[in-house]
Each structure stands twice: as C-alpha cells, then as structure tokens.
Image 1: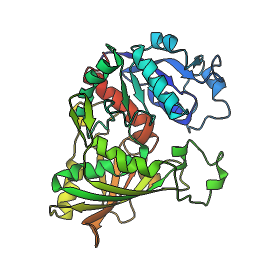
Image 2: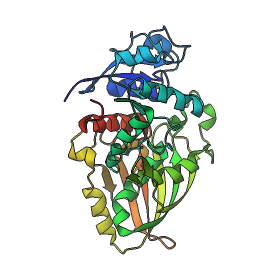
Image 3: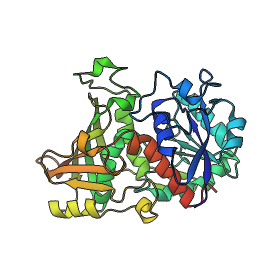
Image 4: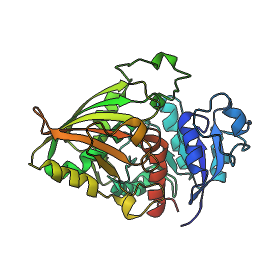
Length: 358
C-alpha cells in the first residue's frame, strides 16, 4: 500500500491526542503536520499539551517535538500532507467553513466533527455498514470545484453502541428501535480530574445527543441518488442519552421491533458471522470480528470489553425476547476509539484502499 502523509487538525484536544497515538506507528500513514488554534501555534506538541494530556499512554515520541501550526494557515498545512484528520472545538459554522477551505485547497478532510454530517453530498461512513456511500465523493468534488479535495465524516459516538448490532438484522424488517445510551465522560472531552462533579453522579442530559442518535442512522442506512445521499425512512428510532461516571466506553440498552420472526440463536449467528467491507479488505485498523456476542448474563462490561480488538470491536450481550418490542439486548463500544478517532482512521483506510485519497 502507498504511504500517505497526514495532518491532525485539533491535535491538542482529546480526540486529537487519540489520533496522535493511533497514527504514531500506523503502517500506511505518517504524521507530517500538527495544527491547532493560534494559542498553541509555535509551540512543540509536548509543550502545547502539557497539563492537559488526557491519554494513559505518554505523548508519542515521534511527535513530541513537532511544532504546532495555526489551523487557519490552510495552504501551509495542505502543502505538507496528502490529507488531514479534523477534530476541533469550534462553532458549527466555523467548522463547516474551515473544512470546506481545506477541501478547496485540494486537501481531503476526514472529519470527526458534526458540522457536515447533514450535508447531502458528504458521506458519513461506518466502513462495515455503508462503505458504498463513498461513491458520492465525485459529486461533492464537482460542487466544491475540486479535483482531489473532499470531506468525509464520522457519525456520532453514541450510534456505535447500537447501529452496528441493528445493521445485520435489517433483513428481518427492523421497524422500530428504542435505545438508551449510557455515555462515558471522555465523550465530553473530560477526565475525572477535570470534571470531579461526575464522580458518583449521573447527568440525564447530553445536549444535542438524542437528535444525533435518532437522525444520523437514517443517513447511514440511506442511499446514494445522483448528487446526494437520500436518508432512509425507517426504522423509527427514539433515544435517551445519559452521561455516566465512566472514563471510556458507551453502553446502550436496545429494544428492536422486527417484522419477521427469528430465533435468538439465529440472531446471534447473524451478529457473529457479520462481515463488512473493512473486513473484506483486511484494513489495518479493522477488527477481525466486528460484533462479539457474550452469553454471560453480566457482560459486556466496560472494563473487560471496551478494548476488545484494540477498541474497534463492538460487544453485544443479554439478547432476549421483550414484552413490548420483539427483542432487547445490551451493546457496548469504545467511544474514543471505535466511536471517534479509531473510526475515522478506519474510514481513511477504506477511502485509501478504494482509491479516493490517491
């Protein structure tokens, strides 16, 4: 595989830090640019993250002395890389403008931000589920007036704890989904040291999260038609999203209405045998098995399962019949790996393998 030079926009934030660790020894990608706000520009990476490094592992040695570039210096960053990963803390309209500016500078953007998720010609890809949405990219390039530049986005982290388990059941006629998510504090870019109020506490509200959880799957399950992605009309989804005192890992209690009958063993087999495009291509970050089913009543658990297959697998358990819906189960994923930086790296690997980043 060709080697690619990559940049991280928002390198000092929590997701940016996770990107730095994932990319430190990546077989295809070499980090050649780190960018952040003007406050960090001119500092080395280790200086910029001093006192705010939130990862268990230390600052990557290869990147520690790399000097941060102001993310607003688009031409400078673009000249150093083949494409960028973007995870910034800005207003949505500012993020949209920044990402489009990079794309128009012929620098593709693999985004962890939500700003472009509803843009009709921007693919929102989970490589195991809707890899075919990448074929919208030529239409987006035509709109932007670019030859190489485009934007592709990751979905919200909460979705990773139920959409992957629902996807293999779609041929059974999924009509309704109820998902209650229990979300780690790292999803808010926090640690317990920075957010002591979360110790021994639950907050029953995460701003904007329920709307994302209910609406974004419709795009993922949609279809490419001409120059846009048309959202699916079903299943109907309702959700509650709750912040819980966990460092990393989102859990969901999921209830699903099916139009067709299937035994519990048939459903488990669907999960265990499910393979997507990421597995077919044997991408470097792809889990060998996307969905792992646990038969023990007390699993999956955060501590034992969140790092399964380097945090890129999704864990499922407690499948049983329900009195109101057809089935119910519990699902868990690592929110900053599968749900954020890791999912973005996997999407970039897919786009490289399919020729969109050449």
